[in-house]
Every structure is written in C-alpha cells, then in structure tokens.
Length: 112
Length: 114
Image 1 (spheres, each protein chain N blue to C red):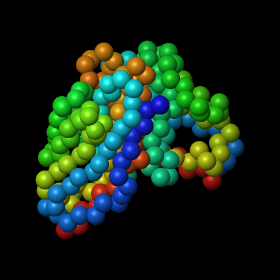
Image 2: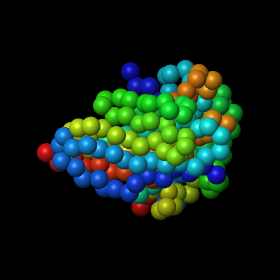
Image 3: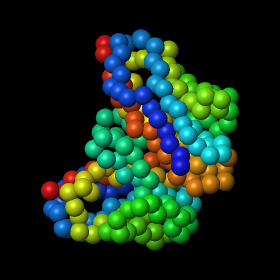
Image 4: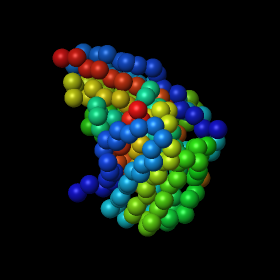
C-alpha cells in the first residue's frame, strides 16, 4: 500500500534559519505529492504541490521538488519566520483511489 | 466566503450518545471526504463520496455513517460514541478530472467524548 514517511519533530529553529523537512514515499504508479500546513487550532491549508517527476512546487518562500529516483519530496525554505511555526504534513494522492495518504506530520517551532 | 465549512467546530459529549457533524462546500466539487486526525496528529481517510455515491469506505466501525443529501453536503453521523472517537474530524472536497486534483479542507470539528 501507499505510505509517506516524514522526519520526526519537533524541529526548532531560530528566525532566518534554513529549513528542511524530509519526506519520502512509497506508492505504486505515479502519485501527486503535496505539502499541507496546519497552524495551531486551525484546519489544513495546501502549501504546495507537484504532479510529476522533477516538478517543483513553491509558495510563500517554501519549495519542494518531486524526486522520483529517490521517492522524495523534501520541503525547504531559505529563511524561516516565527509565523511559520506550525505542523507540516507531506501527502500523496493515489489518483486511482483519490484519497490522500498523509505522513505523521512535523512540528516546526521558530524562535525569535 | 468559506469554501468548505463544518459545524459544529467543537463538540463535547458523553459516551454512548449519538452525534452528527455537518459539512458543506461551495466550490462546486463532485467529491467530498471525511478524514480523522488522532491525538498524535495522524490523519487518515474515513470516507469519500462522489456525486452522492460512496466510493471509499475505510475500515471504520459501522457506528460511523456518512450521509450525502446532495453533492455539496457530506454529513457524518456517529452512534454510541466511545472515548476513542475523540479526535478532530476534517471534511474536504475536490474536483476530479481537473488536472492536479487538490483537496480543500474545512476547519475541522474537535470532538471530545467524556
């Protein structure tokens, strides 16, 4: 079956530090890949997405590249802010089944 | 305008009670979903409906029954609530067949069973 593995958190960084959150997946076929963000007490918001190998998704300074050879979709940001503190979820969409399979989430804490 | 809305936002109830959570989307999407987020933040699909037809039904206790009166609404009814049902329940919607199919989530319903 499909699965998504994320690095365990929490990840604690100082403001303006470089962020990487690792995500690898196992899937049959060619899934679409997503990063969702959940701010404290809120629902899930789509952060970025990619549909095929070598696609790069980007939004609000965050980037992730769909790497088929390493089955990875790592999230990066060059300079984090306190407002980026949240839980980040990597997910894949099995287009045949149309359900998202989520990773366990990584909590990011950015300190001023 | 809220794209995917859920009511109530918070629900506190006693074990054994029956409760419902409502979801509405105004995006014109054909497919709607229910996901459960447990206390460790792990998210898992429960149900999916496409145009009022059930297409995904994960191994969820039959105390949980989804109902889709029309394609803009997907409600979740839970009978005989148990302590382990305490979680955050998220509704989502998407439109299949439009290239990259993105699911849009509601704000969640935080259910606490005492």
